[in-house]
Amino acid sequence: MQDNLYNLAFERSVLSSIVFEPSQFDELSVTLKKDDFYLPAHQDIFQAMLTLLQKDQPIDEEFIKKELIKAKKFDEQVLLEILSANPISNTKAYVDEIKDKSLKRHLLTLTTEIKRVTVEEELPSAEVVDIVEKKLYEITQDNQTSDFKDSPKMTFDTMEYIKEMKARGNSVLVGVDTGFKELNKMTTGFGKGDLVIIAARPAMGKTSFILNTVNSLILQGKGVAFFSLEMPAEQLMLRLLSIQTSIPLQKLRVGDMNDDQWSNLNGAIDRMNDAKLFVDDQGSLNINQLRSKLRKLKNQHPEIEIAVIDYLQIMQGIGSQDRHLQVSEISRGLKMLARELEMPIVALSQLNRGLESRNDKRPMLSDIRESGSIEQDADIILFVYRDDVYLYKEEKEREKAARAEGKEFTSTYIEKEEEDAEIIIGKQRNGPTGHVKLIFQKKLTRFVDAPGYAQGVETVYENVDTKSANIEMPQVEMPSI
Figure 1 (cartoon, rainbow, N blue to C red):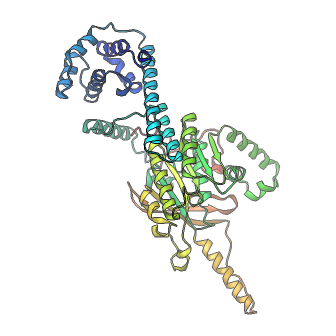
Figure 2: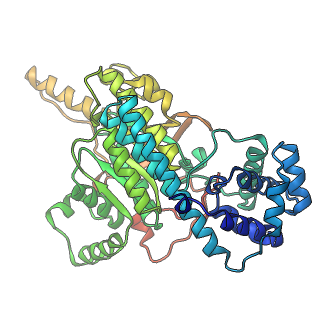
């Protein structure tokens, strides 16, 4: 059985090949991890090679020995065995074999872990399933890491990140594109591992806003996972098609279109057929179910770069605890999942109606329903605000009051096809707060950049009706840090 779990000869051969041909280590260090080696002394030698690579020093016998002595892990006999092993030409086959045996060892360890949490700790079955799924995801994604990162590792990764940012020139986009130029400038995009909260009162357009971001990303070929707890997938698709084609949503719903609009719609349908959009419209979902689904989807489709939940307060809690505790568990779970999957998770959220009693109805952090844990866990909190929603509501209330008193009422409210909108950045862990002006096109349920905000990421469009789609396609790569 042990022979099935490790092969020391293969490990020695791979390490020997690196010493005799260090140029291949750049590529191998991406595939191989320290824990892939069974023998602790082999792990130490591989770690010494990684340290030398980070320091840009030669990966040879003398420097490896020097690093091992410094770490008090030098074993002369093991190093001699590696140096005396014959270098191999087909390194990939040997590496694949080492990785295969490493995976089996990790799976064997997992079976022991399952027994421990199930029998010895007597954890609830839902927690056991979550632990197992998380471990399996880490194993299959090769995310086996040490408990701590030391200073050399952190400084090396940080310098690589800074160099990558410098190579981009003046690009403002670091994370996932929001779809809006000025918002990209303010946030540098939604970062990997970020929990982003988009909050608003009903009818402000928080779903419409995030669908503009989704539309921008899928037309760039990016993958998006969307958990729609309130709206069927078909309704989401109708909204996306309206955003892309500039055909009013109501016309799409009833099929009332002229020949040009039908042609435009067919073109949008063809684009959406190729989109990497995955929608789960199950009406009820708890944090454990969401974690399980998103891990599996991300494993099957690594191209997914963002997940959206519409909306947070509809998610079910676990157990019978107080609702505030349930929401706290949900928000913390989403934050940890974003870090685990190294992608932003965007959750839409409701606001308390108390803000409507204020003269200035622009929302603030304390207006978020069950706000304590959400405010703490979120990296970015955005509020969607349109003043015209309240102006219209006030006009209707005045009309109702006048008719109740038997008075004649003449409306002074003029309904606009395009309304001013604000995206208020209420919190940003790594950037400024403030606001961004947008325009909301009501018939299309579409937000667009406001005039005067034309600076930002340079864009290139290919084979897309950019006038109707309002998309940005920055030609940049995502950072590795």
